[in-house]
Image (cartoon, rainbow, N blue to C red):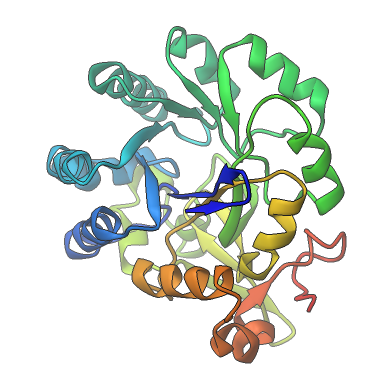
Length: 297
């Protein structure tokens, strides 16, 4: 897809939720068949205990995506806090070498292990200024995905640097990351003996205050209850030099539904669903330098 002089590209971010085999296979079949998507991030990044199910189907998923002509990027965990997650990081970097694909680094501890690979700096690393971008560029970074919470002014400053940006335009915001599992804690069980309790909460675990849903507990992440949505801001992002965008899988919408919403926005015929549901489901406050839970029209 091309707008102006630069092509506009869309990527599917790594799966953040403990989905079952049917959901996993459907997601990546949809990605393979989705003309909007050119890049797909693969790899368990939230909790290494969830990895065996995804790993079981990974060879099949890779084959399907490669046949469909999608670029594959292997993502590393957001926190290397134990031997399991450290080994998963090493395994995903090795997969990138094996398949000659880029690797996304989501914890700086993984950067030294990715020497010689094309590196993407993920949104879980704090990147707020051009000085940070310069450091990452010297260490082999080819693209940066800034954190959700950066506002338009910061994005514009980052976009002026030589490294291309990839901005998250849909998905729940990771507000907090911990070595503890919030779902295990909520259920009064130990993370080391969790028996994958999170698989009973494949969309996360709602938490709130004063009868208002504020958070979504997803393993080691506290996410926003609302879905961060910058679809209507795509033209504005393009105007400040951003041409690469990331969609994160969400339980509420299929990839085909998301693709239709984006295509309608880019054709200047935005879907009425975005307007009808904006205050209930969506937020974009961070982009507009306001409270993150708000939706600014």
